Image (cartoon, rainbow, N blue to C red; front, side):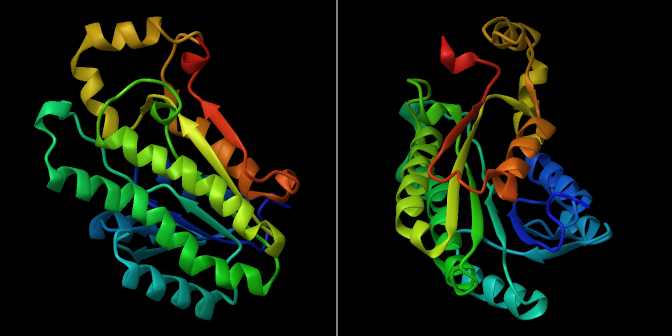
Length: 244
């Protein structure tokens, strides 16, 4: 029996990168998985997998979240797990970041998890049980990245703590993961600079970049009943980079 047998999980940004790895692993562990994403083509591919259902979601839309949570609960009878993973990145230096850049980044990475928690927790509370995993970043924990990306991931960190204390008495656990640099389509630009890539690996105690499965395995632990007495926790997965 899998570690998520008979569970219903929503994973945002589930059609590619880290999200896709989570979707595949959660499905292998017995869950019915909703891969929620804004990319139509990727969602079609995701829906072809066993026990995976692609559903379109703009995480920056409160209305989209309300409709998705209701649709999942009506179709599958419950929501056990929510992984707030969807995000974007930016290479803009701080002097070039404008209000529109800031608003877009915070609406997706900051407001997205807030709205997801807001609309999913009522269904979890009704069954007095649920697990929420938020994907932050090591940049929210150390002095790296004076930009809108780090700010948005800092918001995820604060939201996770607040949600853990707010919903714990309803049986809902909320934890956060803090990935370092992970090889995904979002970080593919790193491969174009061997010098930069070499410096990053050299600066990492484990001497490699992270893989999507590294994050998926940690998310699986926090989503499963193996972590039933863990809430409000912060798990850093960065090869030891931020420990220096």
